[in-house]
Image (cartoon, rainbow, N blue to C red):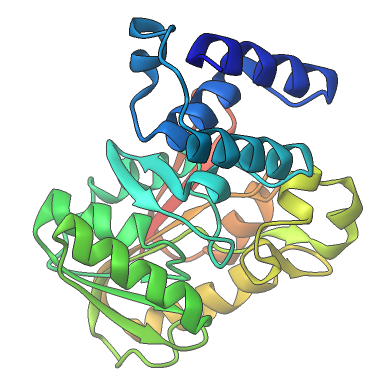
Length: 271
């Protein structure tokens, strides 16, 4: 079985199953099985797969056909130009969350807190981009372990605490709080893509019945943790702008950052 034949067979299987971007998915899974980069597949289409590579590729295709996200199969996801390790214990970082980084970089800070860090994408990125002292919390010990591993691999200095939101953080300790909080209402659970609903951690997805419950708690406790003039930057769920904007009434310098589609994606305000 050559690389070219294996790729074509994988594309065909994924297309028949209605899997999104079947060619890219097959390329990623095959290159992962062969331990090479995707361009190698086209530079060496005649390369014969070893038996173990073929077995791995078949298993990866089977997992993807069952709905398992590609990132959980390869344990890789790029975020802000860096490769993060991801497992089913953490939410897969999305490109949209890079807007949180961009908004946070506009807020001067010597000490940063990332609430609900998951893979550590926000805390690690901001620490490496700014050199600031970075803290990160997560309610899941397994997620915190993934974040710690990513920080070690990428050379970021992160202080991790396993706790509910920011309950372990001292008053007035932070210049900047960032978060991509859970914001999906439980009532929308059945309408989610199966890759999200069946595989990503529910604690990182669902906030409660309304989807605003975690926003409520962060907005209520952030003034305790922030120093005077400190910033809060949060990702916005679809349709959440009016509610969250009202939560931050009375804060200063409120900013709304849209994503590339013009949808309000990030809210920032100073206490």
